[in-house]
Image (cartoon, rainbow over the protein chains, first blue to last red):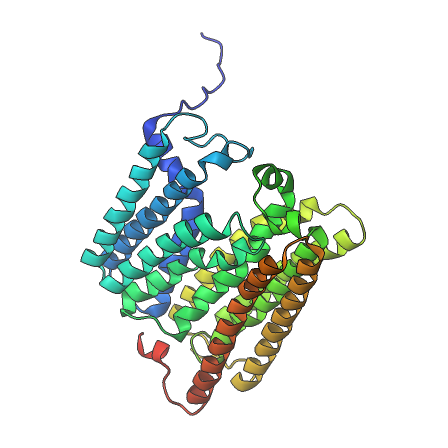
Amino acid sequence: MTAPTAAPAREPSLARDLIALTKPRIISLLLVTTLAPMFVAGSPSWATILWTGIGGYLMAGGANAVNMYLDRDIDDLMARTKLRPIPSGRMTPRAVLAFGIAIATAATWMLAHFVNVLTAALALAGFYFYVFVYTRWLKRTTPQNIVLGGAAGAFPPLVGWAAVTGRVDLASIYLFLIIFYWTPPHFWALALLKQRDYGRAGVPMAPNVWGEQETIDQMFWYTVLLFGLSMLPVTFGVFGLVYQVAVLVLGGLLLWGVWRIRVRSAAGAEWTAVAWWVYKYSLLYLALLFAAMAADRHLGVG
Amino acid sequence: MSLPLPLPLPSLFWIATALVVIGQMMILRSTVRAMRGASSERAQRGIEWSYAIVPVIALALVLVATWRAVERHDAGVPVSSETTT
């Protein structure tokens, strides 16, 4: 009988690095916000769902890989990014750039060929916005980087909607805006916790430039805005009671979490645990809200 | 199965819009306060201000379009999103 051994640490491999370049954990949420709107917009075929899902993954993955190429100088300075394939020396910057461009190109062709041209154009616009507007322009120049840059992450519902309807309309713009206004409280919760990292890398995140209290104040008001905004699609008949209840419960919890950070910070009490909770819950909030949208349209209540 | 919403839709519109407008005004107020506090040049402050204003303009346009859609919906005219399903 041999003695039990500890599970071996997973060795880095090219396949694992290529997958890591696409940031699969982040993309899983992007896929929820792409696919759920497809069921709000109509009844998509399995082929449309499949091609939009694959194309969406490759486009977002390509943008993430190019982002890692452009941020290679600062990724080495931050604890949470220094193990990425470029800073750890496992891949060359040129190989990462080539991989990112290649899968984004494949995604554009796939979406245009198997879904429709508008879907491909919107996905490509999201790619360019993330790479050039957010990463190249805003990220290192303004504390409002993730406010306007949040638009990059808000493209997926437009992509999903266009895949089914072939157009963009007011309802789909609301799905875009929900993600746009969700981004500041979500990212600033993380930025509050990683201030030292961002400071070392010279990225002007709001807590480093404006201070904690001002950032927390803005997180709260962005959450209030998001709460009101997410109710508005109900008013012109896009969603009904299931969605409205989801907005009240999920949005109310998010508001309560951010409010707790605000109160504890103002009182000089420890707030980092609540900020972690808000960061993690905000991910669940967005996934469940989009799931509620699809459920609402198909349950037909209200 | 169809359950009634607890509020008339135009009332819900105004409540939701009030939250959006209050939230946006407080964000602008906070941004101005933060810009005054940060040691940035005048030109940089102008750029920061423009970054803060762009979403406000876009949001105002969306709210106007939404009110029109609420009126159409109230009058029984189908809005575009409803015709897609």
